[in-house]
Image: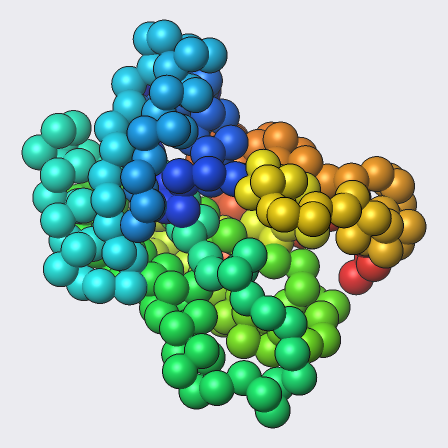
Amino acid sequence: MRLKDQVAIVTGAAQGIGAVYVNALASNGAKTIIVDVKDCTKTKEMVQRAQPAAELQTETCDISDESSVQKLIDSTLQAYGRIDILVNNAAIFASLDRKPFEEISVTEWDKVMSVNLRGVFILSRAVSPIMKTQKYGKIINIASDTMMKGTTRFAHYVSSKGGVVAFSRAIAKELGEFGICVNSIAPGLTCTDVMMAEEGFNPSRFDRSVSARAIPRIQNPEDLTGTLIYLASNDSDFVTGQCIVVNGGDNLY
């Protein structure tokens, strides 16, 4: 197992892509903390059905709040004594209505930024001293290919994900000397259980993305796990500050 006995935190893991990330990390031997502002029991049970021996812990956390994040860090250290991998996956996305940027209120803009970018900053800052002491760590921040395409009517989300990539590159320069690698993954539009559960879900919403891809099919959460495990493992110990786009070749940059 490539991640045997390593300790991983995954945010936004109550459902969707985050839950698939948890399963991938656990299947590679990581002791995984399942984190979300929502209840994570469903994810834990799903992973345990597939992997009865998986070592899992659930934590409720508002990643935009410093005190809530500190409780998460303290609980993880109390249970395992270390933190090797942080996957900053939590984001506001599915609940957003697409609209011209002039119609986005300051309140809505700030709400998106507080989770999608501020939360990444707070968590990364919280684990940094621990990883520095260990002289090793992997921070993997989930961005989006929308920030490369300039997707319209989604300015708050696109801007937040562009900020994630820029932040990842900035702190990669600061943390590299301590053996800490910081990278980001930019998924394309991905079909998740959350989307499929939406009332009136229509697979045709993916047609535009599929037709633009070099690999012309719908992207699934499992398409992202290979890149995740690579960045979480020692195979990527000399890779930092990078943004890996995983979208089947949708617009080749």
